[in-house]
Image (tube, rainbow, N blue to C red; front, side, top):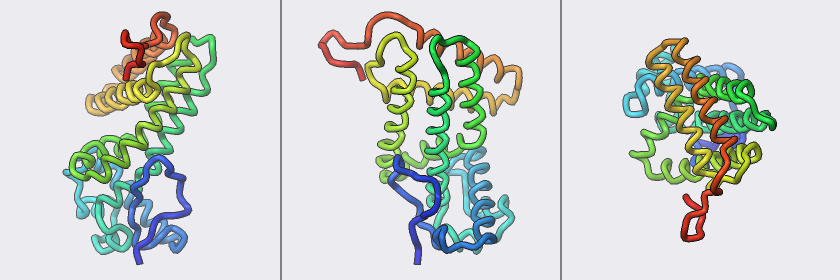
Amino acid sequence: MPGRPRGTKSNRYFSVMPTLRQPAEERGPRASKTVEKILTATRSILLERGYAGTTVDEIARVAGVSRASFYTYFPSKRDALLALGADAVHAGEVMIDHAAEMKTPLDQAQVRRFVEQCFAVLDEQASFAFAWTQAAHLDEEIRIAGMAGHLRICARMGRTLEKLRTRPYPDHAAAGLALFSQLERAWSYCQLYDRPALQEAVESEIADQLLTSLKAKGSSGVTTRGRRAG
């Protein structure tokens, strides 16, 4: 019987869970290793080809398993994508934890280290973020559930950064979304262009912009109508 995954990372932010033909607690070491190979291959192909360009045949080939082995554990590539979701949510939480490590008074070295840490996290997990964006256009359930969870993660990042600011954010989710979007998009281009010196310069530029934003003084972001923007 297909089952819901248990014994994996908590995923309270992403409510659509994958259907696994063999739940985690029922797998032996060999099966768990096979599942990990499938998910590693899925992550790699999603990053290179996107959700629409990823096929079960290609996942099986890269993982070094048969097509039948893939279907032993996952009913579809959608479920393989969703199985990566818990790791991706965990990655967002790791980035928030890195943000929480920064202390006032802020300096460029602290913020640069934070950006470098975020890029390192994206090296492992960015494939899900980009694939989810594509899948969400095709799957309304993924879009709705993923959107709600993603915005909660963004709000957490906004609240964490706000503690370092001289003024409050008008919208925590918007602040977190803006930062995650900048990091993910910049990381994506750096992977595409494959120029280490360019990535170092981009990381430094993002750090400078973030530091300036965190130290900025002025309006709290309340609109002229008395409502907070966003």
